[in-house]
Image 1 (spheres, rainbow, N blue to C red):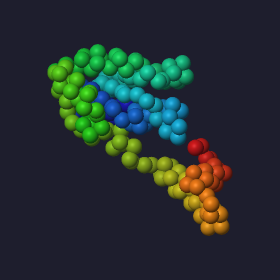
Image 2: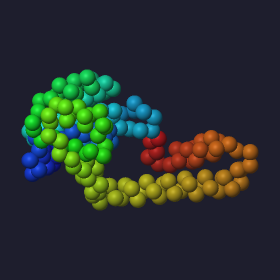
Image 3: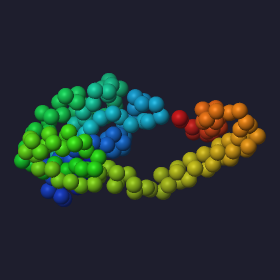
Image 4: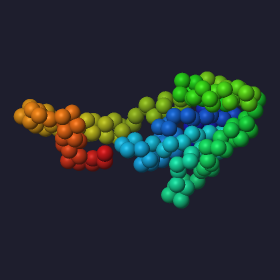
Length: 179
């Protein structure tokens, strides 16, 4: 959040709107189980140059959060955005919905089209993250090799769903498997 606030100041922006759920999850280091095998929180976020973060969601359980955020229902998003009338609001045009873009235009908010700040930052990996990816690929490679060996001997009469379930079974037996 501090890096994003610095980015805002460096680019003459008063706030940044985050429409991508994976970016919201990454920025706030929050995960959810709302969608199967998709650990992102279903939310939008707004960050201002003073490092204040507003999260807009109808799906977050505020009692389970261990971080301090202003969490508002989605219905509050228009009122919060209107507070940036005639100010510069950064956002990724490729990700933000047309409905929100039209709202911003009608609310006379100066939209500054940028790339998603979070996507840029999360693409930079440290040595621990790089090793984690290597380890995960090795574990998955073992599971896929075992699966291919099984498939070679057991493909006859199997449906696509049977095969998907068997691959999942091999993967689920690997260390640190989550889902």
